[in-house]
Image (cartoon, rainbow, N blue to C red; front, side, top):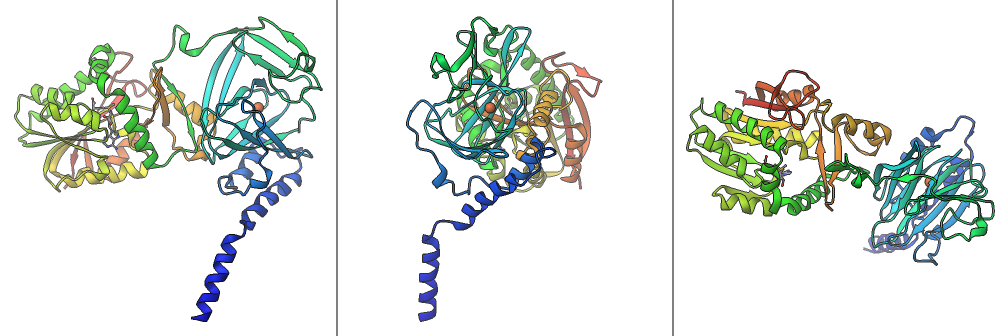
Length: 482
Ligand SMILES: C[S@@+](CC[C@H](N)C(=O)[O-])C[C@H]1O[C@@H](n2cnc3c(N)ncnc32)[C@H](O)[C@@H]1O
Ligand SMILES: [Fe+2]
């Protein structure tokens, strides 16, 4: 008794102490960085070292600077030689100026809250946004030598970040900062205290007016309908489900309208509906399950095209989309596929259209397919389409480019993963682009035999069956093996 009471007191005593371990860890990290030979230790090496450290658990409390100006970040420099280590506190909605990294590189680690990194290109006198990364707690963001970028806290909460720069910036002499609204570049001198437009005129060597033309991406003629928006580190399965639920909540009311009014989308989905209906009409069947049925419009069309009278069941994470499917008479569950309740071997055919890539990881996709196989009769059909990662007319190649450029593999990404936002929309969605062998192997390993694999054009040659491997999305008809 006495012994356990003592133990209890000891444990609560230990718990009441600040976490010495993590505090020491951060100090030892700084020590470790001080000992490196910076003639060979570069951005890659720094990034690799920092990956070993969990900034979300670091006890930075004593180093966090006090925010005095609610519009500007506050800094606390912990070390300047041989590398600069500085802790920043970013008040709600604060942002750095757009600045040009000339002759120095570094990494930003997000410890608390969120910090976004927006990079720009300045070419032939035109400045345009290039990439956007959304740094969640635990993110590491590279700041390469030569980059033009800004960092901002877009939330209403405080964000805490730790920055590492080499060589350290003794002062801001010669640093260029950009103002997009007036198309001005300011060159700071050594009296500037921050790389910011709030500095007095005396902190600038030169102010170059009309130094460039700013072209906002959204306003360009070739403005994309969606934008890549990496979240780092990659959020977990539950967070991705939450993101998708709000994304489709935002879209539910206009979904069918968008689907039928975009010529390429209409031709693409109609072709696949037709391929499914033709295949179904060769079989005897009673029950069809549309996973990720959305508004149910396609399931209805597939049944009508087949000329058959089977029962339609649906599952969709979005209750708003599902409600529309229910109105159409489809018996629909609002659930993720993995949480849906479907009896074993109760279905003759299952479709997973325009949505299989929303499943958050390779591991979860394998479990999802095994579950589909369980609820199918032997010989039952699976219809599924996925985006082709090498389709030269779609986003796959660009997604892989961003993945490599931002070293997203080390932030939990799988090749082909992409987070994106509809232009003008608020919510962010997740999608995976597949290599052909990736999806076929996954199906084979999950108990399916592939009956046919077809490339169908989407934005280019919409609805056409294409023969080149780097064109079109991949549509597969598979069968549950014995
Ligand atoms: C692009 S829509 C496609 C809807 C429909 N299949 C079609 O082709 O028109 C994607 C749908 O997948 C749903 N979804 C995404 N992930 C899901 C999951 N894990 N389980 C069930 N539904 C999901 C979304 O709510 C959305 O309705
Ligand atoms: Fe920077």
